[in-house]
Length: 81
Image 1 (cartoon, rainbow, N blue to C red):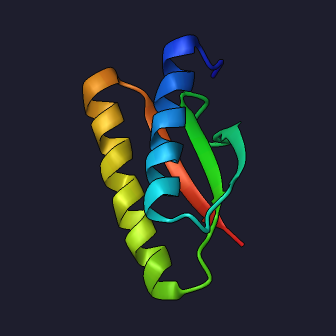
Image 2: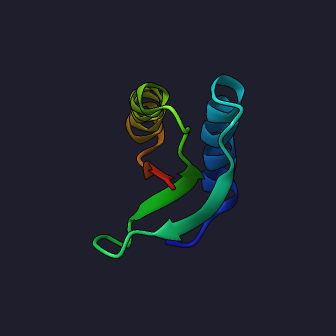
């Protein structure tokens, strides 16, 4: 999937929201899902604390669901170590 202007803006919004709530995270990469070319994986560094990682996953899922419902873009945030 190519990043058009709107999709790029939406991804930046999701990442910005995550960084505000979880400042220890960093964007690692944005890549196409190997399983579905219409899905973007936004890879971020995972918090060291397991509880914060669980919270981050839930928070990111809500943000990505909003993007999917409002704009039709499927984005998944993938915390990595």
